[in-house]
Length: 120
Image (cartoon, rainbow, N blue to C red):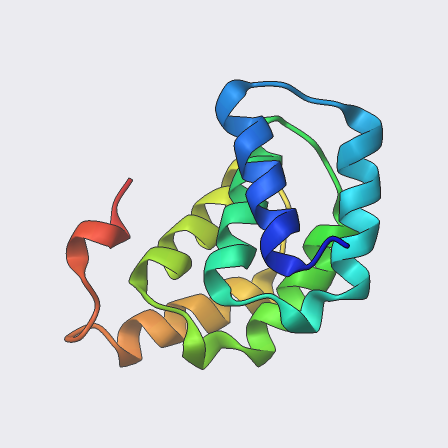
């Protein structure tokens, strides 16, 4: 059974080796949307990073992640903020509400964020 961590780790691993099985990524995207409540911020960031790395456009997944990330924004650390914002920008998925939430969290937590994680 694929859970949130398995999905995030699977897409991350495929992205690291540069292999892109379209059918698998589409299936994992659908499954991820079904169980998005169970993803933690690192899993979300890893997943959007992987989809971006492989150039896989999944608007439904990115829309769903955007909404869920806004709900969970207070649990994001500096690395999850940086990786999520970067992946959305690189893949070209426009989500002003998510960008605003990430920006607000960054301003609120500026003194506690690890600056090393905020820059790629």
